[in-house]
Image 1 (cartoon, rainbow, N blue to C red):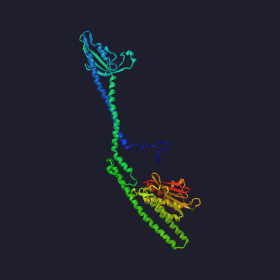
Image 2: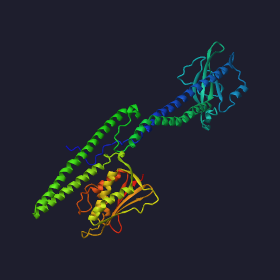
Image 3: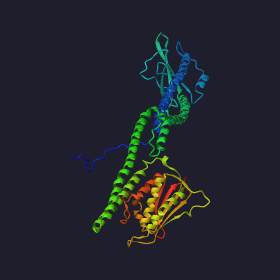
Image 4: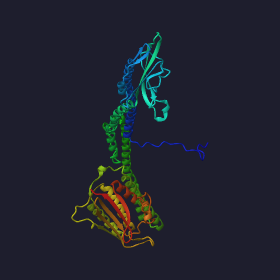
Length: 501
């Protein structure tokens, strides 16, 4: 059965990996509850403020209601209201915090005050000598006919039912109501809320800074562990320091140390294999070449001699290939440690190698020379930190290739007047080793590809396509670069750039 989705069907949704750092996640998870608590604290503070301010306001209204009730006294022919005009003006002086009052008997039949004060809700059962408290709305003019004159005023009302006896012994009720504008009370609510939340709001950035610093201090061991891993060379397989790791990641560090120990064991096995293979492979090939030479000397058959020479050439190419493969393995950054590098005088080092290759160049009718005119005579010789054995292999590969191909005419396949020049130069931060020849060169389109293994830019010669790959790996291991350029008037120039010591 084909489990692939049909054409046009929606693709499955994939979660994107998180990019938020552990420190930011910790800060977010710590501050998020703080923000929730900040909001809950503000709401709770507001509710408490409403509660206590209402209690204080209700106590004031209760006192005012009882004081007003004491001014209303029953007499033989009705009620005596002892409420001077001066007392009324005191109650109504402040327009933002006015006290409104109304007396009605029986309840709902207006006698005195502002007849716009709403009656108690029907759910409130009459309770003698015990005031009710409720919220309502009061018309600003106090007249229902002028309802459009302005918005209603929100008020807090206290209602007190009082009994009294009419002449003739009839029991009657009187309702005394006192209302207070809620605007002033709401201003108090807002002031309490602002005075409470503003300090808490100022504490949030301070708390964020403290949490950020605290998480940074808590994650410092992880940062040290990360730097220890990042700052290592790819071939440094020493175990990590487990004592510097937090308790939560020690199991991970132990697992990494076990992995490093396994890799180190594999590298040691590879080194032993390379050393053993060097002896085991070279010996039979050397014997084959010796036996081939003896066979050539012992026969006069031209056809057999030609075949034996081909065998000798194949053995030579096999030995060369084995040497190149072994050197390529040794040039691997995972095999050679940085401790194998030492300060090296580049000028003297290159001069010695060029001197060693002069006899071979002379046998190949190639003019091999050294050019160090770019070095200032007053300066100290340039030094680098390098593995001399590997760097020698890289330079000999370049000189060998230059001698093989110098003076060749790619169009006609002829060779004459070969010249190879090896130079040393410096700039602000690097040392340059330049090997130039007057051969056919390498087309610019092929210069990146020839650094790959077993890739050759030409079919001429007996190379195996590993020389430039070895050079690239050795130079990269030393933190440098290698570049192919055109030589003047024609040919190839290889420029090795290495960090100066």
